[in-house]
Amino acid sequence: MDKRKKPADPEALRARRVALFDAIERGDISLRDAAKEMRALSRLTQPEFAAHRGVSVKVIKELERGTGNPTLNSLNQIGSIFGLEVGWLRKEKLK
Image 1 (cartoon, rainbow, N blue to C red):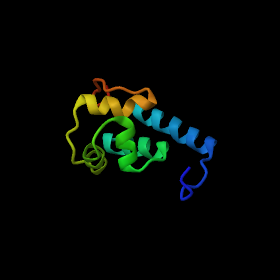
Image 2 (image 1 turned 120 degrees about the vertical axis):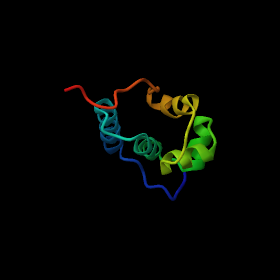
Image 3 (image 1 turned 60 degrees about the horizontal axis):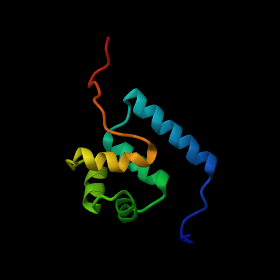
Image 4 (image 1 turned 30 degrees about the vertical axis):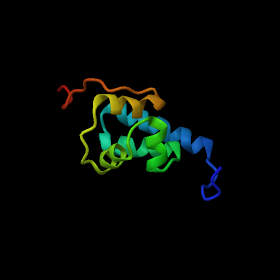
């Protein structure tokens, strides 16, 4: 284990994961912020996360900056570790 990393608090990570899933379900989180949170929960650097998910570092960096145009395959690879996949979402909530 990298000695620079503080030990993970499993309960805090679990609470963050639940909050992420809730925000996704409500549609209250951007793709950019969701990707950042997934990587933070994984406790990996951008290059480590990219290698772990099988995508390029460029994809991760651009996604986290909000400037990327990732493929559906890339998004599914990133989200699969959390049991997520890309689906159709409404832009606005029904009134």
